[in-house]
Image (cartoon, rainbow, N blue to C red; front, side, top):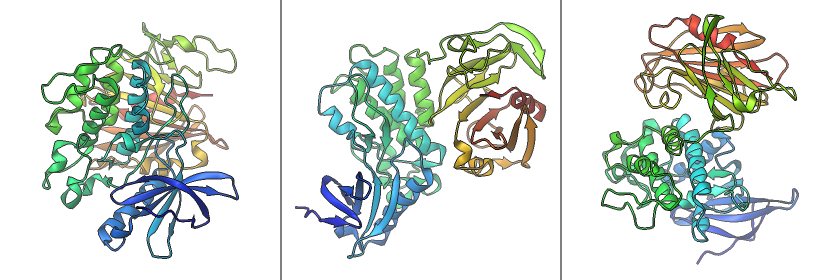
Length: 448
């Protein structure tokens, strides 16, 4: 039996939220602010194990460093009088996916949207070189109470088993939850990478989208009524026994789910027609149908460019390329241009460019720090350079001979003097292209 403390630090304890192998989580109340928090306390029987204690503290450091709306936020780190550390975290008022699954099942459409949102949250971890390794319904939280057809904002929690990719092997490689744990996690000599999380996401997809009891050994996946048939193949690939047969990361799985459902983002279908050359880029008549006018301060459509559905971000489209509008793993408009937008993230032979706009990103970071957070491990870094294009100051870092993903990647962050806006552009240039290709692309970026 767990005895409820009266207070932890300055917080009054109201009730127990959950008990795990290594920690207990309490609902606390900040009386000064009138706000609730979740407080995670290291279990007493593990308090003297230095490895477990360090892993607990690692979680606090990871959460503080990530500081993303899709990952549970940490507010403070403290220590009880008996020496046990605790984390003060944002409270997910909407509860967990485990609690949601115990009630009435979600309809097929909201369940598909929820799975894509979970993939987007895990993609944030993968973008930072982190493998969660324990993706279960209990570790998927909801920031708010759900609406009638919406699960609410998804938050990924419990990174206590997460490790940097370089250290995700050896002693802790066996950690995980049966039913969601990838087969290689049961091998103490295996290297556990992003594909282990893909397996866990696939198993979550089974819980959300498959007929109960289906897909557990006969190689078939029987989907619930209303789920697009192509999703079955996506889930089979995600849960393949051998890691090399799965999608490489959460973003690739999310893209595959999007293709399987033939999802069209708010920008709607994209039309393309060959035009003339402007600024070194062949102009094609690409216009997002949801951005077909410039009313209300929106960016007007331009020949050879695509405008996001909100009318805030515009990107040029090179000859023979197409475009797609949507959202990244962070809030804000995003665009992709590529000869094959659906495949450029999963096929290293397909070039492409991704652009994302944050209205206040420059208020919390700098271009240098933002690029440093995407180190492209194993690549050969090129000299950093700056450029001023169309009123934006660009900080540009290039990487070549990359062992994973595209062989060449360019990371560019643009800011405007005196403005909190930040534009991020990642380019996988065509083979044998010159820096002029990237510069022409950046010169065509427009923001409002």
